[in-house]
Length: 74
Image 1 (cartoon, one colour):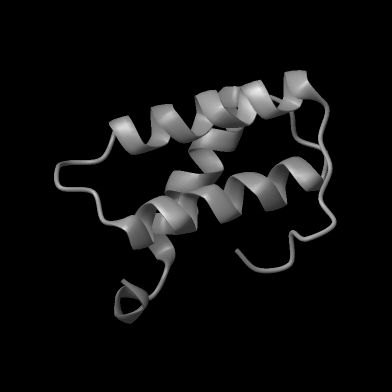
Image 2: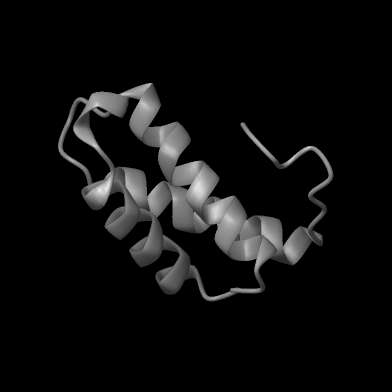
């Protein structure tokens, strides 16, 4: 993961982020590539680092970014 070496979150935020990641990945059709999971995780980390704490919002932003990402990245 890029640019997250110094990221620090309290346990409750980590729980929200895990729930958002699980929900986002579960909403994708199988098979889900590891590149997609990594892209979703990076978006959730970045968005949480910016202060967002709502699980549904983290999930939605990650899925939107995944949709608009250039296809050649996956």
